[in-house]
Figure 1 (cartoon, rainbow, N blue to C red):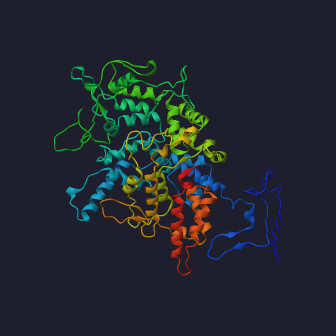
Figure 2: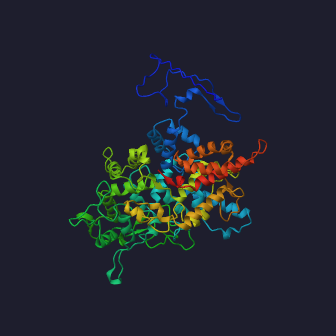
Figure 3: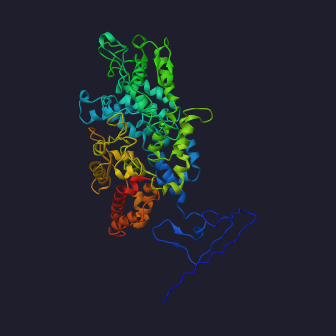
Length: 601
């Protein structure tokens, strides 16, 4: 005998006290409507209950929550569910405006403070202070992680990392011993993240760490008799990588073509030589205390140079005469060396290529690998002129994150849309979106094993060309579709398996460590799964919660079923709830290694 459950819905429109809608009932369009039903359900051990009113009041829908999760996946390193819910209650632009007002502690100072504390820990562990390695790259990484767990400046930090993959220096170079310099360079990126791109370009030009990395620190003027010529390294990269790129661009990022249909180079070797003359004469403005009696002068090496003070100009070492730059632009003879540099930076900043070049790089970092020409054009337009200002980073960021191509659901379904989330961003997501069991109160992490596994760490690029090339095409299928996939440049059979092994380490029953120091004998810091255990009572509920956090509501039915079927057999009793802990670990492990998580749509 079949039983029928009857649901009675009675609607009472209130014409005088509520807003009227003519399109549909539901999803929040329920003012003045009362819903009753034959039964409402609540279950033991669950806070939630099934309410008849939720059938039309919108509270049973997660669409806005999932939209917000996706937005924050683009604009941050990850947030917990409470934060996602809070942001979902207001327009995204409001959140961006609030983030614009949040400043950040100085990373350079934090590196110094952490190094001082690390020395005390080293000594307390029986170490000889003479054996302490000084303030170096590992202290910068401790400071970076300390700055990015529990912080409020989420957007600024995300933009700073994106800029660090465009305006590249690296601790994996001759800069590795200079932690304060690394921290101060990162300060330049994050302090200018909401400023003007011209100021940022000038500041990185004068930064000692960039000067050492691309060899325009102590770059001398020409001396033909001694066969000495200005170093061309920075002159080349400030054009190729930091501003205008290799070929002339239209505002939508497409290449300009000559009469033969060929791309038009933006510069040639003679142009590089002329720009190299510009970047001569820069040397140490101050030196650190030293036993050698060395004072500030041209020729002082990076080791003694104070790395948190901009370089200064030594006029006697600066190339005299006019410099013929791009498109007939001339830097006149007779002006100071610093004025030459300011003019050259201004010249590149105002080049028509700079808007679309930077627009594409930032869109690829934050939203998608293959933005449409129209999307690039809209962001370029924001760069070129927002209320009469060129290079306004706030306008550029809003144009990227609020564009319909970033926000519209129709683009989510577009097969050309999306990007592979680079491994270190996936790492940051886990550390930020899951509680950590931190008893020491120190969120220090070196991430060295992860770096060896995937090749990624903040400011850890192997070359000035970043971890991967922005125009990387993985295979013939991508080539046939005319699509780029930059992050696949470091997604190999080795690194992909190594990433899976790292996820296993974070979630394994015997390990679960997420943060580790190196050489300080500090206890590794594991993830804390207590909050998620509540949802593990039902495998599908757990997977739905993980979907909101990590896959933005885009977990496929196939992957969801695989996870549910793997979690379901893990059983226990009402008195022994350890099994829920293991359910969380299994569900999280399978989700974090899934393509659904790795691809941001």
